[in-house]
Image 1 (cartoon, rainbow, N blue to C red):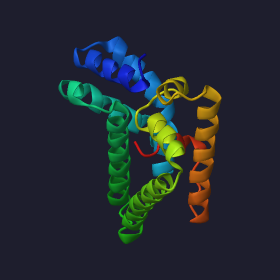
Image 2: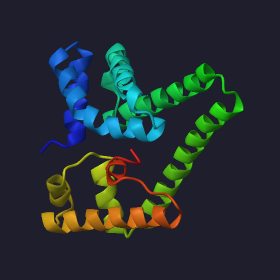
Image 3: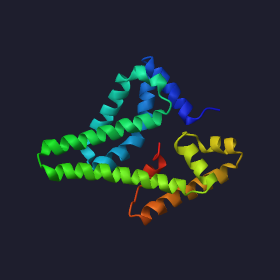
Length: 190
């Protein structure tokens, strides 16, 4: 049985060979995931399309590197984060607002790092089975049915465990004043 990660790696191999249909499929898989993330980081609606274009342009231009990428989702998200922070840095310079604009950029970067650290803490505090289900889902990109099969659990047990894990992570973050939309938690920690 193939995992989401296996499918993404297969797409990467096809894109590396110049397959435009595979590239379009990758675009359609990731665009709905990246849009809210880009908005969350930049807090600017009108730059979403530009940053999406930059992300996918980078992927296409890096075709030769794609076969060596073990975790496509993580790699794509790193490109998106980099492009978002690049936008914020350029906006600070472009607006010539000096310390105020630079401070916004630095605050956003610091907020992201702090939130990532808190998510890692929250995941580390999950019960072992919940942590394993969460990481298989998020880091390995496995579907719930694949996780159930691998861990020899019922599909309902996996669904319930993942739901409790997400609720626990949200609660942990909320107790520290961080409120993330569920969608961002869905692919955080990649």
